[in-house]
Amino acid sequence: MSYGYTTRLVQTNKDADRKLLGVRLGRTCIKRNVPVVHLSHTLGVSRQTIYNWFSGTSTPQAQYVPQIQELLHSLIKQDSTSTGIYLLP
Image 1 (cartoon, rainbow, N blue to C red):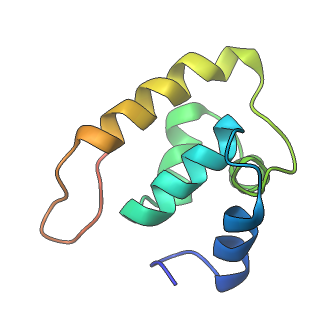
Image 2: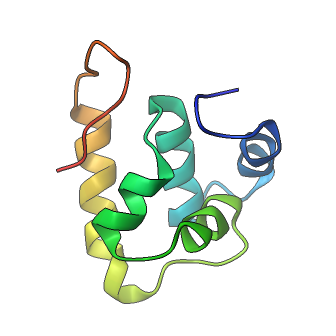
Image 3: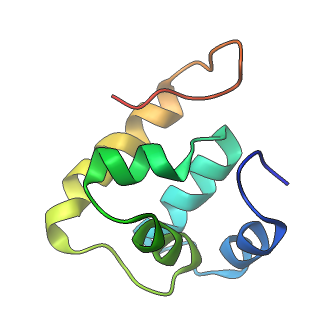
Protein backbone atom coordinates (compact mmCIF):
# COMPACT_ATOMS: atom_id res chain seq x y z
CA MET A 1 0.00 0.00 0.00
CA SER A 2 1.23 3.48 -0.86
CA TYR A 3 1.41 6.24 1.73
CA GLY A 4 -1.95 7.98 2.08
CA TYR A 5 -3.86 5.50 -0.07
CA THR A 6 -5.99 2.68 1.24
CA THR A 7 -5.48 -0.85 0.03
CA ARG A 8 -9.03 -0.74 -1.30
CA LEU A 9 -8.38 2.36 -3.44
CA VAL A 10 -5.12 0.93 -4.76
CA GLN A 11 -6.90 -2.30 -5.75
CA THR A 12 -9.87 -0.45 -7.25
CA ASN A 13 -7.46 1.64 -9.31
CA LYS A 14 -5.62 -1.48 -10.50
CA ASP A 15 -8.92 -3.09 -11.53
CA ALA A 16 -10.18 0.02 -13.37
CA ASP A 17 -9.80 0.68 -17.11
CA ARG A 18 -6.29 2.02 -17.60
CA LYS A 19 -7.40 3.85 -20.75
CA LEU A 20 -9.29 6.38 -18.61
CA LEU A 21 -7.36 9.58 -17.90
CA GLY A 22 -8.41 9.68 -14.23
CA VAL A 23 -7.31 6.08 -13.70
CA ARG A 24 -3.92 6.82 -15.29
CA LEU A 25 -3.61 9.86 -13.04
CA GLY A 26 -4.43 7.67 -10.06
CA ARG A 27 -1.84 5.03 -10.95
CA THR A 28 0.81 7.69 -11.36
CA CYS A 29 -0.06 9.46 -8.11
CA ILE A 30 -0.27 6.24 -6.11
CA LYS A 31 3.08 5.07 -7.47
CA ARG A 32 4.71 8.41 -6.69
CA ASN A 33 2.96 9.06 -3.35
CA VAL A 34 1.27 12.29 -4.44
CA PRO A 35 -1.29 13.28 -1.79
CA VAL A 36 -4.87 13.61 -3.02
CA VAL A 37 -5.21 16.90 -1.16
CA HIS A 38 -2.44 18.40 -3.35
CA LEU A 39 -4.24 17.29 -6.49
CA SER A 40 -7.58 18.63 -5.30
CA HIS A 41 -6.06 22.03 -4.50
CA THR A 42 -4.11 22.17 -7.75
CA LEU A 43 -7.10 21.25 -9.90
CA GLY A 44 -9.73 23.03 -7.82
CA VAL A 45 -11.91 19.95 -7.26
CA SER A 46 -12.90 17.98 -4.18
CA ARG A 47 -10.92 15.03 -2.86
CA GLN A 48 -13.96 12.85 -3.56
CA THR A 49 -13.81 13.87 -7.22
CA ILE A 50 -10.15 12.81 -7.34
CA TYR A 51 -11.00 9.45 -5.75
CA ASN A 52 -13.82 8.95 -8.27
CA TRP A 53 -11.41 9.64 -11.13
CA PHE A 54 -8.82 7.26 -9.67
CA SER A 55 -11.38 4.47 -9.40
CA GLY A 56 -12.90 5.07 -12.83
CA THR A 57 -16.29 5.86 -11.27
CA SER A 58 -16.30 9.17 -13.13
CA THR A 59 -14.09 10.87 -15.67
CA PRO A 60 -12.68 14.40 -15.60
CA GLN A 61 -14.65 17.09 -17.39
CA ALA A 62 -13.02 18.49 -20.51
CA GLN A 63 -11.95 21.67 -18.70
CA TYR A 64 -9.60 19.63 -16.47
CA VAL A 65 -8.02 17.47 -19.18
CA PRO A 66 -5.18 19.86 -20.19
CA GLN A 67 -4.18 20.41 -16.54
CA ILE A 68 -4.26 16.68 -15.81
CA GLN A 69 -2.17 15.88 -18.87
CA GLU A 70 0.35 18.50 -17.79
CA LEU A 71 0.44 17.05 -14.26
CA LEU A 72 0.96 13.53 -15.59
CA HIS A 73 3.79 14.71 -17.80
CA SER A 74 5.42 16.57 -14.88
CA LEU A 75 5.04 13.65 -12.48
CA ILE A 76 6.54 11.17 -14.89
CA LYS A 77 9.56 13.39 -15.55
CA GLN A 78 10.10 14.70 -12.03
CA ASP A 79 12.65 13.30 -9.62
CA SER A 80 11.39 12.49 -6.15
CA THR A 81 12.48 14.50 -3.15
CA SER A 82 14.21 12.84 -0.23
CA THR A 83 10.81 12.11 1.33
CA GLY A 84 9.58 10.33 -1.76
CA ILE A 85 6.79 12.86 -2.25
CA TYR A 86 6.49 14.39 -5.68
CA LEU A 87 5.88 18.10 -5.99
CA LEU A 88 3.16 19.45 -8.20
CA PRO A 89 3.85 22.41 -10.48
